[in-house]
Length: 419
Image (cartoon, rainbow, N blue to C red):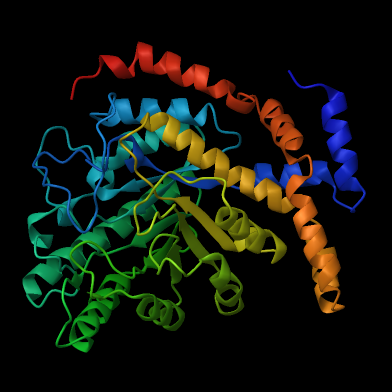
């Protein structure tokens, strides 16, 4: 257990710079992370007629204990949530509908197919977010959906996205919290296209039809997510950053930035200040690319800290919707959720314990030596003691103690599943 002396020693170090540690912890407590359900079952979903994973997405590894149905996936999420400080949200894909053994087309899914998720969220005081699933389906087999030249295929996916938005709105009403519906599509070409414009015209027209159905912004907000390239779309992606940024601004939608969807030399943290100037809200899918969009478990690395700093130092906590997006089947899946989400929260605490206003003043005053020196010194301030105290106060395991819970859960539950 922590001693009051450890926390108080660290607190005094930060208070010398005018940082109210208790206020920082209260602010941290109010931030909800949208935790993606698909880490728990390798993006398999619950459809009766499952298709092979497609859309430039790949999950590697075969660690035992993969969730096989809604009950198991929710139980795994509950275990992860018990190890993560704070109250958060769960992000669902449309393929996690529970249809009582009946085959239901994606353009015919309804709120009733998510009632178990809604009841569970009510019981656990969780919010829900939603995503239409425009991959792993026969009508997406050639890598095109909302930008497809076949009007009937486009219409199918338009109807699916409208159905998804209705479901998210219903979730928001039932849970009395605003859901985010995020649209991502895999559309693109492996080799150099002979026409870049027409597919984007078709995508714009499809989105216009989708959003023609109005939802109540109190219960549902809409986001569009860009990507630079993927497997099978190395040379051209229809829904580029420029496309969705422009579309979101023109149509009052939220532009969602996935940290793995840009060139390896680009950083999302460097984009946030510009985005905040021109957008009321922004949304994130925080992942960890390794050379490409490989969706590794979020680590407490420099880019994660810089993302959190940009959110905090620009007073954008209430304007930024933070979600996670990674899937690793090479390690314990519940541990992956725990590691990644705890790291996102750690990064936000790190940012809240930084003297951001003072560092801004140093920059404005041209005191770049002092700015660099302090930014470097704060990297070794006793942040860990504050984090441990927060975990203790939130009744979750301190330091690596949560691994004991994971090992016990694996032995008692996960290893008894046979996929």
